[in-house]
Image (cartoon, rainbow, N blue to C red; front, side):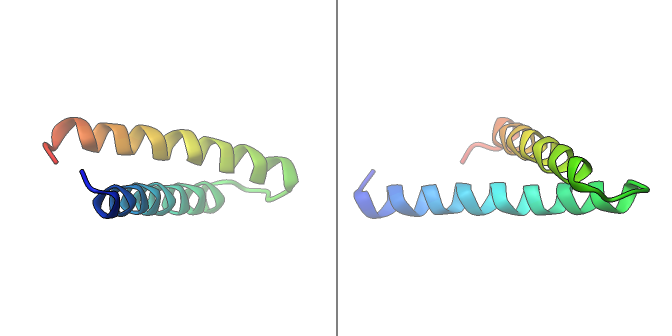
Length: 64
């Protein structure tokens, strides 16, 4: 793997994690009834965990 393809792979992984995080955080905000600071922190944290698990799950079923 060359330096250029390694950098591209890192950017693609970061982009995928960011997209998953944004989608899951938005879903959290839509489904809760009150939006306060603690709910935002919990939602963002859960979205990070969900994004990592979603990426791992997708990578487990694809070969690239």
